[in-house]
Length: 312
Image (cartoon, rainbow, N blue to C red):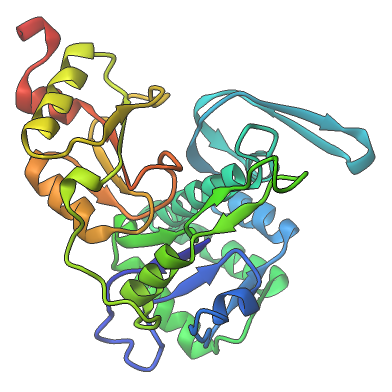
């Protein structure tokens, strides 16, 4: 999984932006032709202490998470829904993998956690905690960034919006039980090549402007509880040539703003769809439905735009 700030900083010409963080061994990524010039590594204790230094983080826990392993001293007990997590609870959230998605679900939660940490770090009230945060960085972070570069990046981050962060997961599919006894995430080399070309300027494919809408796999997760609103969204999509649309389980919190999630990093198609809908915000991250190209997490702005079931 990778994360990068998607906008260039005019005052950071020497800092090799955009910034990328990777949640897998760097040598695997460099096989795609992408050189990693700078790195930041933080250990498990560092994550816990960083979250505590930030004063905790707000995050939506997608499901009840309960697990106990005395041999590993691993105890996980989190309730589903919007939660304010301290450092220990944040580690529980990150380490949980006991669902039908296994490690891929954990990667999705890592992206959710990364966004929550950035949002908390950009909160003006966090400035007073800067000395404690710096202490954690000095004790638990390994990096080849210079002090000058760290300061420049901190200044850049303070001026950006968390929604400008783009997070990618290498495209692939779960292995079949007939092929492997254990579950593996098998890479989709064609889609990986397209992603590397689009975001890092390497690879062999020329990225097309946008896929034909009829071939885009669009998953819908409703957060409004309004079945008529969902039906109107599907009808609107169909009328505009988006035929490969399907409904997934509801999102577990009400969203004021619709999210158009570019699950595999197809930013062009996601932005085109968002402009067509006239509501919502685009997020480049892999927190949507795994087999979708775009996941629409329907929010109340759609009701405001097109009316609620009570008004229809």
